[in-house]
Length: 354
Image (tube, rainbow, N blue to C red; front, side, top):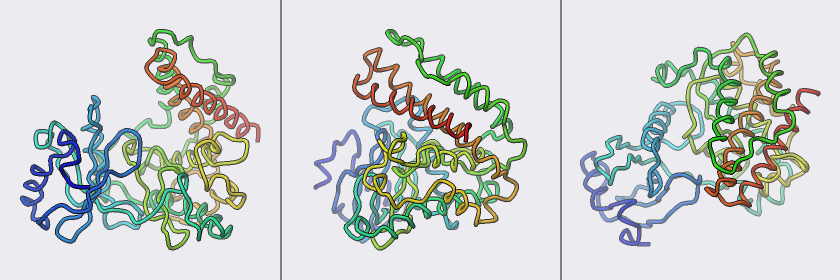
């Protein structure tokens, strides 16, 4: 694909060339220009220039109110992770000035040589259950690497508001759920167990935790794996990252972990269909192998974090169901996500009962 085949409203390559030149990046023509899949909200364009590969990330064609701020935050997190052992794309350069490219903040990052296991499995992985099992454990190891990062030491001391993070979670997400009632046509939430789960979370909140970098949406669909083996090549889609309790990311992984009858199965694709994936207890044990990830954190309360993840994600997905009732999203999508919400609350009650 040639640069002129990309909508100039998304990426003006003449502007991009001048901006890159001003930052001392290699010059020359743009080659191997191609849109990349990944995420549903933002735009990814891969290209090569001057013998180096790049991925450009910016918001969608029709920018939302917070898109540029989210992109600025993403770029800052990726820059902070440089020098750590967290598998993530590395930031090359960022343009926080929205006046440069058609009103959009953008940044350039390294390309990832890998695949998403919820979309496809290479033959070498699809035919080897030992590799599939290790892929699951490596999801926990990659997350532990993130949990081990000292957010203040890498310059993210002011990136979030960790004070009261756990205390405000239930009320924050119940308020979000209440806000959906403003959508015409939405009859209100029909979620069995909602009040019971909320009450349990308030009554069993951990008393001890240590702030750190929270990815905010950690599940298999946001991981890229190496073509060469079971290693995680990169954690991607950092748009929900903040400073909070990293054990919520581990709880999120447990809440979305695929099983034949659970809510994760609908989202986990080929790897999710594997019978070789480790059990959730094995994920927790693997995470715990890294002392600097668990120091100062109460891993014995991991069930609470898994229940909170089910609660939060279920409410987030119910928002699309509400918008579908209001004619602002496809009805079939709303039905699917509502079904997943119900599955998440069922899983939350199973966690509590177990």
